[in-house]
Image (cartoon, rainbow, N blue to C red; front, side, top):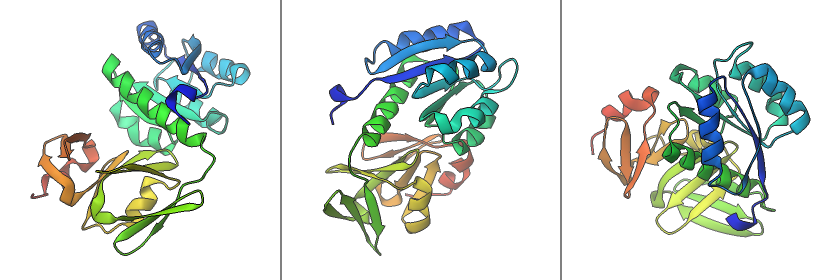
Length: 240
């Protein structure tokens, strides 16, 4: 399935700041697969709207009148496929990801950051619409990826980095990217810790692919990957 054939993803946005709601609505217009079904000024309005709109995707703030976005998502998580937090509060990021949020955006929301999130939403939706479940088997130095009836054996040394997308993990190599129906946490439990390191809630890197270390990001094969705050001390101890 190509991006052009991706079914529309219906979304609502919930935020007590009208300017942020305007930004979400305007930025979403650049992505035809995102269908705006309404914006709402507090969690209660958003909850009531979700009950009758039944959106595929919810953008939501955390601190709002009535009850928080975290509390709201706990109420509706089983009914919403994709959730994205847009908030000024970085301290709730871990709890947000524990609720399986696809992304966690810190305000101020910019068009570039929204574009990055839209890419992740599109890729995740494409994965969900594929007929095959992409399984992965871990060997000593290899991964065997099952794509339907086909199998691909991949050397661990060819992996550049891994990207989490809720229940899926994308494997990035020089030649091709692969999708697996396995969480990033599962990958990190199986892969050798002296070869792979988690550097973000959504990313892990192959240590031998790191070309440059920075305070809040690493460069792997010309790709700049963010480093989460909780992982920076471990990154600072690395030596290339």
